[in-house]
Length: 368
Ligand SMILES: *Cc1c(COP(=O)(O)O)cnc(C)c1O
Image 1 (cartoon, protein in one colour):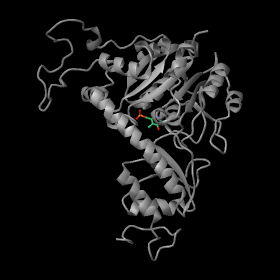
Image 2 (cartoon, protein in one colour; image 1 turned 180 degrees about the vertical axis):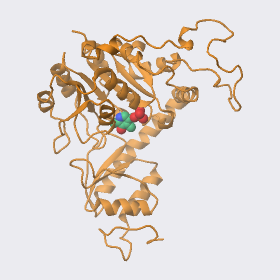
Image 3 (cartoon, helix red, strand yellow; image 1 turned 120 degrees about the vertical axis):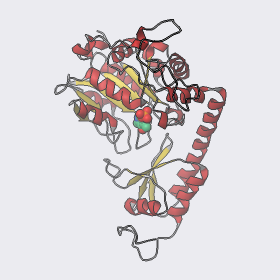
């Protein structure tokens, strides 16, 4: 069987929108897309009066080389978020099909499913945040079309081994597409599983320039999958997902200078990660620092609410993750610049503010 047999039949039957930009080939004078003939003020040669390429060639080639796949195995769009949404829309029939996730995990899988009116089946991670492959496979019903696995996982930070990914792939063959979200893989001790795409047509991998590549604001994410799945998603992708200024930012990041800078910053995150893990674990109010292979640490506190407010009062914003299962006492702290990390340690290491109990709620203005 083909992995496309899992997709919505009406999507498979669709004709893509044919944009003027796609139909144009050759030519020097472009009067085919009702664009302005004049570049806007401050354009600096970007050419924003013209529509961008649907899948900018230079970007697709750069990303395919970076991720070690062929061009036809890659779709670039507005962050991984867009790829998650396209997958759910292409594979899940509203009111009938389902996705499977392992909480606590990234929230966008369930959000996209709810928008599509697909059910969300949850197989929680174990107490040590490891994934139970047998439990996932046992929970697969004919309705489940997509299984999302986040590794390293957000917000807990743990990884799923390559062996477990392969066991999942073997168990899901002919049943569901496995979507491995590798948003933080650049920080992990192991590599990507994207090389398995050639062996498993039902594997898709999400990558992003938002984290290690410092381009969260440019919104550039990639889906790596078999050429069949990529072609299917191109049928429903909006015609011009990558704005020209974002394309320019991404191409600059791929220059030799850009790559060197990114590598330097990733090395800094790795060493700061080690320093912060040890220093946080030694603080009095800290119960545990969860093992993490990402650019953040999930930290358990005796009183996470008080720690959150103490940091906020000092102008430091971290993520309150107490709403997640098994993380009711935890905050997620991103690794920043060394001086920013120092500030976290200074604030958390300082004695409590006089006149306020550790568990008391602060109100604005109480502590000027
Ligand atoms: C940050 C993050 C992403 C990236 O999303 P973009 O839309 O590419 O910015 C994807 N998955 C997870 C788990 C993340 O934490």
